[in-house]
Length: 262
Image (cartoon, rainbow, N blue to C red; front, side):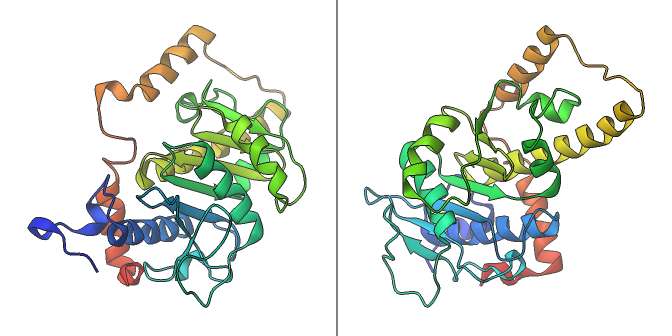
């Protein structure tokens, strides 16, 4: 374990490039996805790119629940899927294809987070996708890519299409599959996933009313555009989204099960 200046808690060192701290924060992210019910048994993945020209990244072992993940369990691989350190664990092929694509195509994507959460997956199956039904949804308007379903993502030739479809955005709807978020930090990728799921749930609830004869009260396009700018310009806050909430999330994990740090 690396040493940290001034007794800084590595779980709270947002923006760090130290591998030991990134491992702890990545493990915390897995536990939070499980805590908020966005996991899918041993499937789905969260990865983080490590510093250095090698383009190595950490990804979860195939076979562990998100609630079991800790800082020492990750598999370190390169963009070709080769292990660069010994590990008894294997990596899911679909996870490798999706995550290696985004890490190779987006230098700003330190963290890539993919889920099959129920509400987000339901939204991915709607032609209109995520609508500006709630304030939660506003940050994503004009800031989402869409990738059409091609089957289970085990073919490496799909990687370029994933890169093309996410474009400059930090959120990618995977049609009939789920959603993917990226972040300059682990915290940013997590908070984008958290609020996408929340926005999706609100929309689905509202659509039950519409099915019963009610009507959406959607804002004017100019208002939606304004709200999207406000969220994505961060109200003048230079910190990446998720930074402000992260200490509270760490306190939650440390109260309930601090074994993610191991």
